[in-house]
Length: 357
Ligand SMILES: [Zn+2]
Image (cartoon, rainbow, N blue to C red; front, side, top):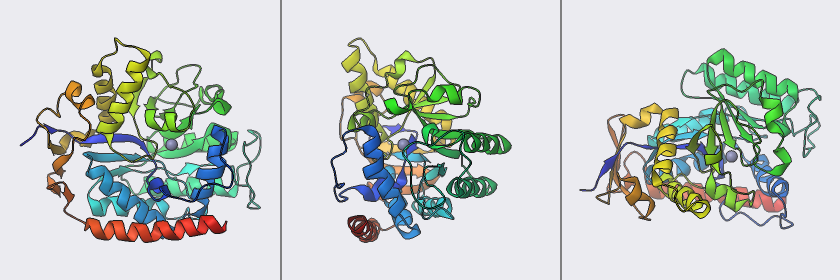
């Protein structure tokens, strides 16, 4: 039998992106970070309905479990299927047995007439879409299970919305989960967030963050490389750092390896202990992860220096809150073939819808 560890935590995920794999190419090759958002993600999220969200989340949760990730902090957006979207994600994860913290990413980029804008004027009034998003966050918070208040990014919300999100989070004693300074377009974000951010906020990316903010900086190294936004170099910041995937799966040992490779690329003397700290600080965000037990197919999976140099480690069993949810590397509560089959059907619907759009 291999080593055991607590559950891993993905501190920033987009479960809705599971069905994006294999999606039709955008009409033009995006040549900037904003173009990636406009031509890939903002087309995809607008095409989602609740069935797609459910199966995307369910497959994403199964894949997380099969990688030893027992807790997911999710950030969701589906502007044409806002109501009930967070309940659907919760249900899908509960059926797999994976813990999830949900948030709806509020934005004002959709005007009330259905057209969209690239950047929102801070002084403009709150849009209907943002109101619906805040209501969905409130519903999730009122349920009493894990949730935060999501905001897409400061450059896509007006001041009124940003303040309302911050107030809602305060009302429920939780933080705001927001993308900050991922691309250069949003480099000035800290000026607008400085007076609002709290220690319980999740500051996602911070690649171009000019000054530290209260809250935890969530580093997503593979996603940053994929979007060519630069290296966040989280070591330079005084902020606490956690690790996320930004929707590219939820294999946290794998993300830790990428984080370590990027760290070493900058500094040969860097230690894997730094990455271990990031993994532990991710667990601090979801302390229940420490009650979960993962048994690995590798004797030294509990040593960070082994883990970062051993690609392909897999869990054999996973117990979440004392319940066996993975046995022989496969989920016990759901039929993996059925989940893959149903998710593939929804992916087909989604991709056809994107071709027609
Ligand atoms: Zn993200």
